[in-house]
Length: 146
Image 1: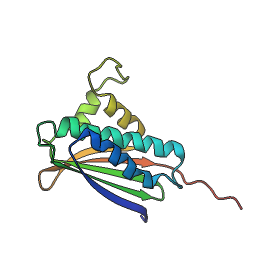
Image 2: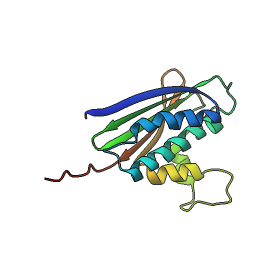
Image 3: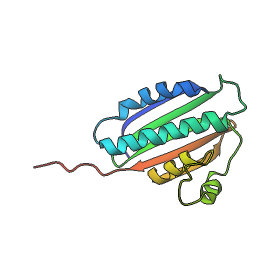
């Protein structure tokens, strides 16, 4: 598959870096992504990043790096977020979540949103003691007029 645009970013483990992450992601805010798909991807990215800070890096120093990469292809957008947290079985956890979002729950709403909006969602252990959250959002290209 041919890449339209690809970019990466490294930030410290800091919720305040979310502004930097979202500003960096603005470069993907153009066709072929529709406004709706881009907003969904922005929300997916924000939830994935905040989960890395709040959960994966909970007990790690603030200067621990979170790496983010996004790649836009002709039919989908891919977001990868690497962290240094402990291994975690995301699939089992997501499958254990109730089908509806509990508005009073302490957590889990972000995973519900990611599961609902992303077409693919996985979290795997990679080399160098890192984990990779992979989020894929498919979209259809607008047909050109004659």
